[in-house]
Length: 250
Ligand code: 1GP
Image (cartoon, rainbow, N blue to C red; front, side, top):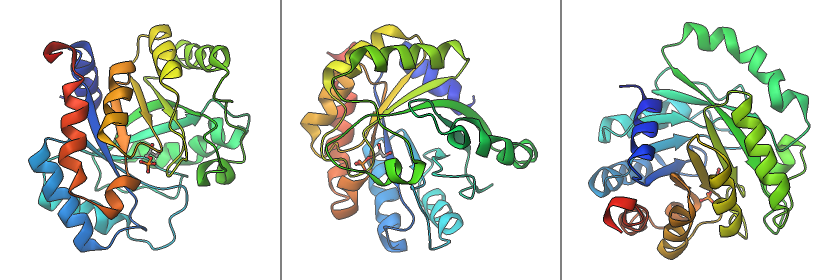
C-alpha cells in the first residue's frame, strides 16, 4: 500500500491522523531518537521532515535516525528543491497555491522532476495554502508570498477547490511553523466541506485541545512540530487528542 492510499483509506474511515514534523536543524540526533521512540509508542501516523531553510546538512542522518527507531513512514516536507533524500518514503510535492510566486507554484518542481523520476520516492502532489497567523513566519518570508487573510473564508475555499480541480491530491492548510495563531477552526471546517481530497492542517498548534479541535473541525491530518522540540513527552497526549476526534469513536 502506498502512503497516499493509507492517507485516503484512513480519511474515508474518518480516522484522524497525526504527523510529527521534524526539522533536522532544530533537533540534536539524540532528541530525534527520543521523538522516534515516543512517537512509535504513541501510534503517530507519519513523520514529516523538512523546514523553510535547512543549513546544517543533517537531513539524511535525521531520516536514518527516525527509520532506525520506528516503522512510521517518513514523508519529506521540503521548503525548497534542495531538501531531497532517497532515504525517505515519500515526498509532498508542494505547490504554494495561496501565493503568486511562479517558482513556488511550478518552477522548482520542474528542477526537481527529473531527480524525483529517478528516485524511489512516492511523489504526492499537495496544494499548500498559507494562512495569515499573527506574525511573519519563515515560510512567508522565504516563499515571498502573501498569506490568505485569516478571515477571508471565500478565498480559502476557492483556492482549495481550485487545487482539487487542478488534480492535486492533498490540501495543506498552513499557518506556518511556530505561528502565533493556528488556522481558524471555521476555515478548517469550511475548506473541508468544499473538497473531497484529504485535508492537512498545522502551524501553531501547541495544546492537545487545539489539536483535537482542528481534527474535529475537519482536518484529516494534524501536523505538529514546534511543541515537540521542547517536550517530546507531549507526543502521546497529542496523538491521543487527534485520534480521539476520529468519527468512529466519537
Ligand atoms: C509547519 O504545520 C507545521 O508546517 C507545524 O507547525 O511547528 O508550529 O507545530 P508547528
